[in-house]
Image (cartoon, rainbow, N blue to C red; front, side, top):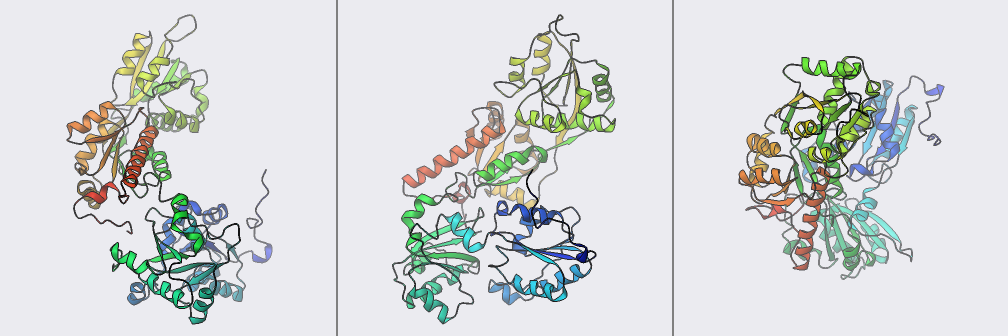
Length: 556
């Protein structure tokens, strides 16, 4: 058993009835960089006060109903300058803490290195309000790591951190005289000025420089240059002037950040689907694990339900079948989808039953995802296809009925109202009687928001994953046909045929009828595309950047 964290012990009696504040570092942007202690603190919060940049990063770990008072921008001029002045956070923190509530104050990066959380801590200390600090990955440390820029080497290079917005002449003189690595926090349109300050203070113009915007997120982009050439690099690349010039960046100066080294160490931006917006047209329950897999390849998944699941119109058949499970009517029950597991589980809960009702019944699952849903229910399936994860694959491994070994010859098959007859016919051929029961209905989902529909038709998505013929028909029906620059990936030949019938060009076909193999196939396609561009000396772009009028930069 792991020892308890010293920060998670109950408050002492002296603090009983008082509020408590946790100053929490949310990291530079990647939600995966939150610490375990941060997640614990968020789960126990009554009030969550977060900077707008990290609100979505932390809100998902807070409990339902947590209060999230907004830090509003005080004046428009500060927003234009890229340093928005927020409503007095200290007052919000103190007000909630005085009321005896548990407050989490979330800041970008680390509370001790980014922002000005120290003033709020002093305010708590002055009133005797207990507080703790949960460190986070500092922006100036996390962003270079994601850009493939090590700050130190075996020789132990000196590292200096500079905020260009507040640095005075003395600060520039000191870092200019040093030959160590300098990490500069600044804005996109102020990088050249900061480079000029360093050259004026003694740094050589040919000193290597990397500039990263959107660090640790899928909007990340990094430029390689020198102190003397960065202004020209931005001009030639049409990076500036830009209305987004106020956006924060991290610039790393020093020989250790040389472009030749970064070519080998840029692990994040070189992911096969880095920055790709991928449409996942599936039911919400089914798309979660697929979206996680796509994120691991650097993609930005966008889930659009095309199929809604509803109860059967007449529930009596399902009710009789579930009662038959309990009374010993069946030898087998076969689940062909996660939704079928969910439908049976809900009916069990309605009758006050649990997984123990499956005792003595053999259970089959059509594939790994369905098997995982059963395990989550507390049921370990007896049969999962060893080959193809489909009805045909299940039949390949299904034993024929044997009156000597099988006391009962009946199979319960809960499934969708539009399911094919392949499994039913195959089981009957093997000698089994089948109760083919409609456990749920699949209907076309409501259309997605207007901006999503426009992105689908206008080429705003880089790829679409089609996992069945119905997802093709339904997506086109509720949102329109994807633009011809969008990469179309299909789970199998039948789905590909349906896509082609709707006038779509199929670019990727999964080698197996598995959503995870489909995602892998798309990643392989993206990797080959990236390698071909690099070999030809062309910039690596996303498919959506090829459409007419598309922006070439990845800074949004």
